[in-house]
Every structure is written in structure tokens, then in C-alpha cells.
Length: 50
Length: 350
Image 1 (tube, chains in turn purple, brown):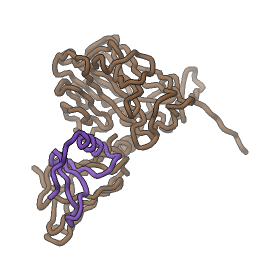
Image 2 (cartoon, rainbow over the protein chains, first blue to last red):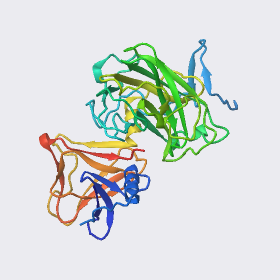
Image 3 (cartoon, each protein chain N blue to C red):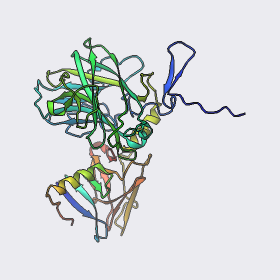
């Protein structure tokens, strides 16, 4: 469902991809990110970035 | 020559009963965005069967506990809008569903806290507001809705009556401001306005009183989703300061669009079928495309390819409230789609 993705240098994760369609920033004011954090708090783990 | 200060919640015209506006006259009188339902960036008038939380017409989202019980479409059913309007938000029930205790089916709008801060809710100085709209339904009876805070631990259920089926009816509900609770005054939700389409007992409360619970409608309200094919249309939605409703605050189209674009903006294709393409369009070390937003966003937005798909490579995205920068390392990228129709959407909805 969620997958982390890296910057172009592949040095750090810079966002999350949901369902391979929506790219979500690490911003606590972003409601998609809030939903992601709730999903994490329920014990889920995103797919690692490549 | 100084003229002093006038503090007026309502300004009367010289014509008896004529009211110019409430709160700060006609400047930001209406706290609802897209109250006339003219902006529909996501669906452009197409019908959708929304999922929970899905935005339909701009700034309005569907909140639902069971899927596929209703559809939403701008100008659904093609009835004549009320005088002064050309668009409405139309809900059509997809089945005869009997709501159970924990069910809720809503059309809602979250108003940003910056746009409700002056109401001083949560303080002794809380201002009275009036919610008004035009409604048209195949059903008659008592309908419900509510106002809620961001935490959904303060709510005010209300009722209104539709006496004549398939007739535009003007509704006005006056609500004394909440003097307790926490009401956000920043980029979070200040007030959430809900119109119930069928709400179970868990989320229904006594009309006309503030409660420390998440009530989305009033006890006993009519269920739209309870009748197959039932219709429920609204337009001219306005939330204003004051104890009476005043004329709808018309906003020119470009201003209404810009107001919506603070929360959602779409980058559409050009005559070459391209919404986005790296520069240079070749295999280079670092290909970039920067999408500068027309309107600064409420928060760093998420983005989705809403039409077409990435060709070449899928770029990484770097976000800010003013732009998204798409970057690939070692190759180019572009949006490609059937018939050359490509688009990207950026969402910073509440």
C-alpha cells in the first residue's frame, strides 16, 4: 500500500508512494501524511525504498 | 477629518429589511469556498461514486461508512438551479439502504482555521453564525447536519425542513458560537460543516445544542440513502457571521477557482498533449521539471498523475507549498497518455 522513495542520489527517503499513484511528502500538515502516520501507529510497515 | 470607528455585524440599506452584509460587510462574508458549486476541477461534471474522504466538487468531500450508497455529480439530474445560480452539487441515492447505529453518509466541507479565527470560538467572545443554502430533494421531511471542530469532540447538530419535494427551498440555520472546546485558528480545520444523507444513532445528537461528541447530524433526520433513487441537491451554501442569513456572496469565477486552488490544483495538458516534461528531453545527468503553483498551498501537497502516466522514468518529487520539483538522475521523463490528455493534481486538502 505504502512505499518509501528516495531522492535522486539515493541517499535518503524523501517521500511515500501510496498505491503506486499518490506521492506524499513528509509534512505533518498534509492530510495524506496524517493518514500514513495513523497507519504506521496501527503497527504497519511501508515497503522499503529502492 | 477623522470619522471614528464603526463596529457593525449587520449593515442595513435604506430599503426596509435590506441587509448589505454581516461580519466585515461583504469582505469574506462567506466562509464557505465554492458555495455556488461552480468549481469541479477533479471531475469536470462527471458523476462519481465516492469512497470515504474522497473530494467531489472542489472543497466538498464525501464521508461515508459504507461504500457505493450514493453518487455525486455537479448538476446531477439537470434540474433548473435556483434563481441566481447555474450549478449545484447533486447527490443521488444508489439503493434503499437502512442505516445502522454506526453509519454515517455525509457531504462536508472543512473550513481552514485562518478563515474562522475571527469567530473566537472556544472563548467567551464566540460569535453567532448563520448557515444558509438552497436545497432540492425528491424527499420531504426533517433533514439534519452539524458543525464540528477539528478534533471532532465538539459538535452542533441542527435540523431543517423540506416541505415540498422537487422544489428549491431556502434554508437558514443560526448557531450561537461555541464558548468552550478547542477551535483551530491556523492551517488546520477551523470548522467542519456537515450535511447528513443518513446518519446512525452513534453520530446523531440532539438538535440545537453544543455537545462534546462527534455528531454529524441530528437525531431523527431523514435518510437520503434510505430511498433508492432519492435525490438531494444543494447550492448557495454560505456560513456567515450574524444571527440572520443575508444574500449569497457571489464571487467571480477566477477568485473562486483561486480559493479552491489553495487546496487542490491540477496541471493540465497543452496542445501537444503534455502536462509535464523534463528539460532537457534527453538522457542527461539530471533532468528536472518544476511545477510552480498558481496559488500557494495550505501545506506541502501530495501529487497524483490523474490522467496518463510517466514515460521515460518516474521522477522523484521534492515538495513545497509553492511548487513541486520533479527530478530524475540519468534519464528524462514525460507524461504520456491516450489521446495526449495528461494531467497531474496536487492536493493540500484539509
